[in-house]
Image (cartoon, rainbow, N blue to C red):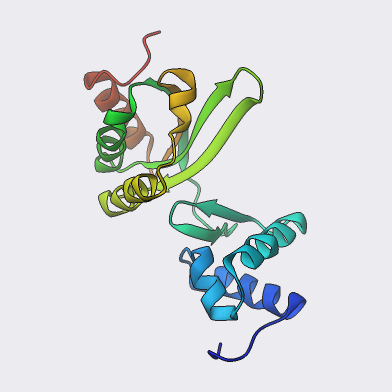
Length: 178
């Protein structure tokens, strides 16, 4: 888009959707705001409206992504972990080093029930970006609401990668004991 033209309503949402569908990379709210010459808050509203139309857009720590149905089938596993916030980066690095994508973190909140937040990290660079965003925003980890107890949905291209990641978690004392 140009630096001077402000895209309006439906045209802006169509442009955002096209970017997300065709470029295969995450876009931050700030990036989309600059590209369309509106505020980040307008973008948040646009994304909400697109999601309400059943567009598979996911907000991640790297930005908004479009979940393409053409992605290869992956193996998934949910693991129960327990650790303090000071070990989060270690846990995430251990998982991505074993060829696993950490899709999300989930806790059981006593009032709200299950709370899930997207993480979507697959390599150390993405882990660093996630950790930097947590530090810069001074956001709390969901697991801090449950004294460190949380679940992760893990995905990988093979069952073996999931098994190796789970064993690495066990060896590092991250897994909850059965």
